Length: 441
Image (cartoon, rainbow, N blue to C red; front, side, top):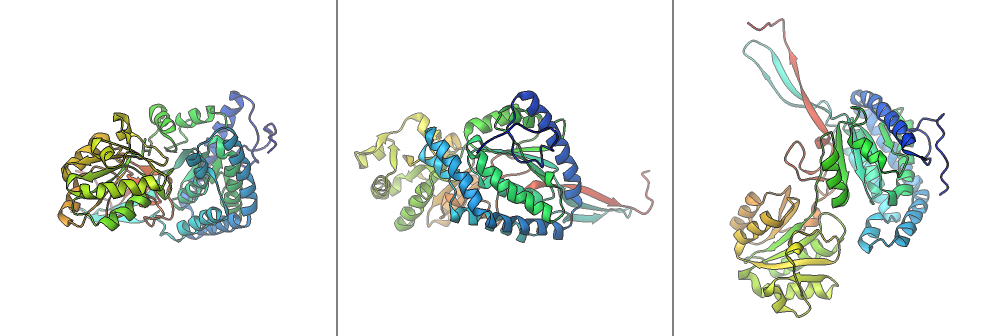
């Protein structure tokens, strides 16, 4: 792709991608993006469900018709990343194909099919003095999304924010720069077709890291929330530097615990899927915990993983069942490998599993495999993670699988949003109070 200098006569939001030559240009452009996003938010907050859905339908259609252009742009991104030494897992997150582009468009359609959260009355009551009070869902405002290699986030975040009545400023990763541009062009065409402001979904037109710092500063009060989606380094920077609220998680250190009452066939099937379906997603299992009472299952589970090409790093018990197992370091228990590597350990029952997860986990997603319902309930109640599962793969940690249509990310904090961040999590509420002349004595 040939990049040309930004033409200051054009709006930086509505203009095609242009290179930005220095930090002064970046500051000017980002300030204008913030102002335009705030203005667009005021329009979206009052937009009807019909108009928002029309935009989403047009976006999905544009994504499908632009599939060839999106894939061509993605080929350039992938070639550049491969030349730069990107890992196989990283390339998997970056790469698009016909099926993945179709899934992106389907995701936009799924968001369109969701019930509009804006204006929903969460609760209402009448006070003794006759005043009525209602708690009503309203948009959060302007959301900044900072992400790395996944180009699909461009469409997921744009669609979800629009459905919830928010404007969004997207800062995609350098490696997905061209792919994000191509996807964003389809989203803008959908906004235009529905008569909504194009600045409702803005894409930062530069790879300059200064843009990230400006977003974290809030763009002069025009950004209300930041959502980072990427590696530990990115999220740590966002949480350290942000001057606005953040929905984020640092790691997806997810655990599979095989209880003494686990069905062996189910344990094998779920573990293989949880670890190796896609190793580069945040819901991939990174640690295997096996109940000492289920040690008979340990050898076949470890053999299955090793034979499937997964490196196993284990404690002494695990190393004893297969000479191919490598010693686990203390750091391995807290590592999100995002690769075909898993740490494995024998623990003393569900209490041992819970204690290990509490000490080393990241409060993202953890699963128990057992036919003992009482043990399962104990695990579900006591493991303090955003998502806990019984007899299911950790790779279900996904907004689409939760019926949210899509997600911006998985939040592991305890304030406002937790778990997959979908349309409802992208709203807040206000109180509408109606009286008939009441005054306070």
